[in-house]
Image 1 (cartoon, rainbow, N blue to C red):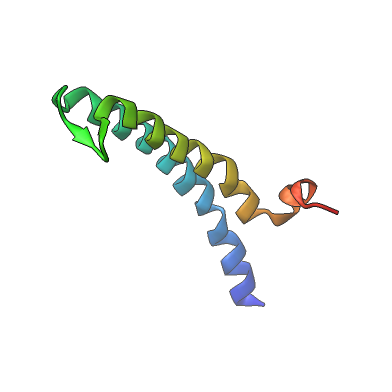
Image 2 (image 1 turned 30 degrees about the vertical axis):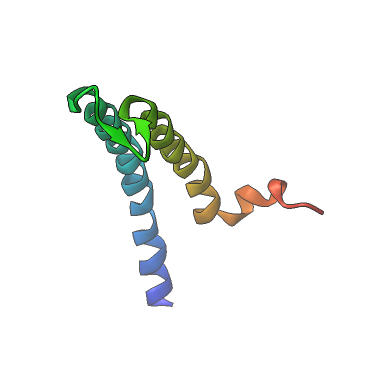
Amino acid sequence: MVRRRLHMKLGWSVLAIGATIAFTGTWVAIRSVQITPADFRFFNLEYRRFLLVMLTEIALFTFFSPRVCWPASGRRFIAR
């Protein structure tokens, strides 16, 4: 019982960690495009176009993270 209460209290730190990842990830992605030379290519893409890939990954993380932490919030997405 004690471990469960501790686990539940520590679980709230996930909110802070998730918000930090979403904020700093976006900031790092945008900043990396600003400081990279214009002719730099990454996975055969101009690095500026790769920003869309990075921001999409962060958006998906932000969207799906609460559904992992609170499975009941994602029940409406489950096919019946």
